[in-house]
Image (cartoon, rainbow, N blue to C red; front, side):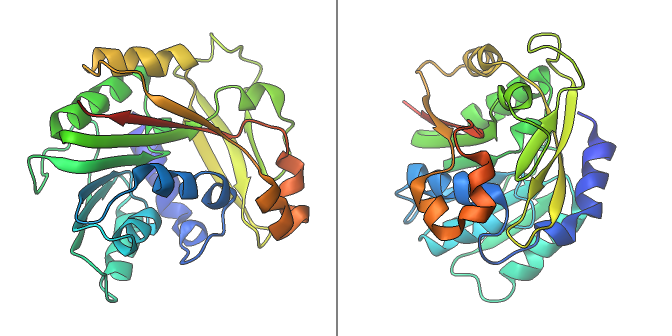
Length: 254
């Protein structure tokens, strides 16, 4: 993983990610579906890989989790998550700075729920497989793993304009695997936020899950702009109507 590059990117843009209400496009199109598919979380111990400044972790805590442990490669983002959790969290919340591909300082042997909200996006295929192996070893029987990524078709079908895009730089769908694609995702207040991801094909995600030892097919949701989004703010969302924006994978442990 391009550790220093991604850590630096998030350290530098921490202010633009900090929020206490939905603001960024994916806060509307992706994160509510994470909470929906994660349910029930009441009484659950939750591991948040790539927790950022703790936005989703706080939502999970508010939904009734017994504890939340998050790690992120950006120390600046982790600091913000710790600060927000210190202001009266509904359950014990702990955040550590670390690399998910080799992190070993987990406070528990197993977790009931594991989430990786756009964290896998920043990993190569090999690194993703290692993280999936860690998840499988840490996932309690009957547990659930959910991760989200940019839709792999998006850079090839969407123009470079708001509210979200990635630049393939002319690379084709297969030749671009494990290459970094840069772009922007917009906030409702009009501010663009720099984003990047390591391109992967659909098959890469399935192959990595199988290599990590998962033996059941994941549930997949292609995330998009809905009629409810348009009713909320047509001017903001209408530019993304009809595009597959993100993917959500849900894997239930046997």
